[in-house]
Image 1 (cartoon, rainbow, N blue to C red):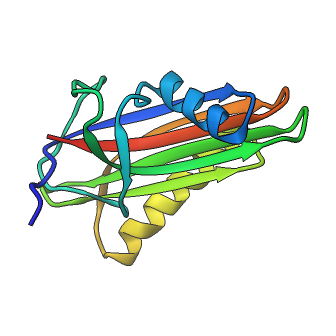
Image 2: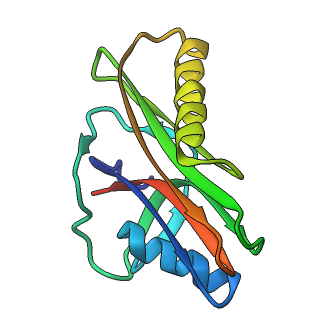
Length: 153
């Protein structure tokens, strides 16, 4: 059994790069999570996890992360990524939702917010707080938008 993360940080960033992978890497750097190894996880915020504005971790660490990302090579296209966390009234778990698409930041944030609300309704939970973070990017050559919830110790 792995330890349960007790901290979380919402992150978002977008960037260009000479290749799709470089664009993704540059977006991670802009978001502030570029020097760790992402371990993609599904979408549950552990009970009692506390929000931190910035990551305080050693480079190369394994980082459980729920994220949405999109990369495009269509010049002029607007792409966006967003995450939302639904948190209930009690100290129970929260629900994280991720979204990415060929839309602007506002629409991405609205979409992911509704996804988080619906996830709480499906669980018959009452929503107390909704945290949202997103970004958008207009592609110049090869662009990437990335949004994430990092879960850490």
